Length: 268
Image (cartoon, rainbow, N blue to C red):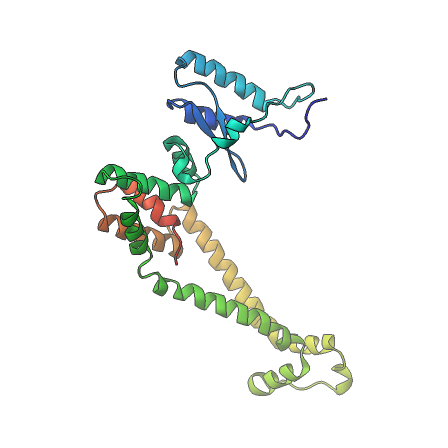
């Protein structure tokens, strides 16, 4: 009986790999799956384009087949396992390009290092000081840029947790009413449980909570429409501004590679 644990890759996934391997001498293409990357060897470097296309088509049919009954599934040999890339520096240029397009920061870092190697005509190790200097320059000034986000986090957490006692805790509700609301206090028999306290406090808690919720909903809708028009909300604008600054500081390197590295680099 065949192995039923082998997932069938979609045609789109495989065709992406086929397109990636079309101009590759190594014949190795990156198949982008949902959570990991796997490599498929379509043909040897000496095979003709027709032979490589035929091999790729055969592999495409095999990977996309959902009928695994009686299918002999090949397994990696020890040599294959030993040759498995473990670090980004071991990946091919084609694989790094595909991963960088998918937003993988490690691949974008490695592409930048190789760009430094090409432009400065240095080895991988000798390119590290320049890469580290660019990484530090990319993070410069980000402490101030993080202030609005930290304020937003602190405000949201404070409001979230304080809203509970402000609605249901008797002493807190009485304190808030005395200083900010001055509503009539119900009889004691109507405040015996926390639900009764919440029912009373909701008379003045509902308007601000409802208004704040509607306000945030409108902001979210406006942000969505900005993105539909191609405009950059604050975070997108900030990241692209940082990338432009790094490109201006290092104009000798490929702007696209530098920009990709900068936009997904850590803020700290």
